[in-house]
Image (cartoon, rainbow, N blue to C red; front, side, top):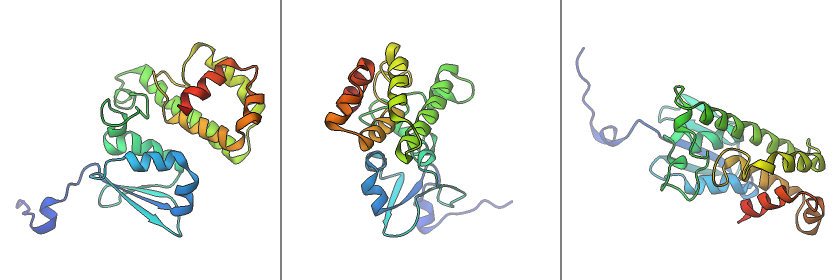
Length: 199
């Protein structure tokens, strides 16, 4: 087999860790977490197309072999393996969006990290339920208070992760100000967590 010679723009185009994020402008404006992640993703790896009509999608690779359309999967891919963990590495972004666990969770390297990444997915599903109105917010806040009694954040990490931010933003979008203060009055751990995530 004869080796292939690359010429022109093909010779300078990388074929690794390139993604195209297509997001409707209304969805981008209404979703602060998606806005944050899209704004800190490397412009060398991520093309962001803001459209007036259409659906959210993340096309992985220049040939578009894989396309993600679910918001949570899009966010986790942007923060994790989709961009070689660039948004989950010390010094690359202001936060470790997956708690520094993404690279260590593959190939059996760390069971703790594998569980943390699974936890992020689960907590993001809880946030989706809050956003969609399918969660009893009072019951959730009570359960969350008990869960946070021995933890700083919802997954093992010294700072908020994608899951913390997603759940925080979902809660404050439903209730905020004095109404939220009233709901968390007896929930010291949730109050602390809300303060940390909002900082």
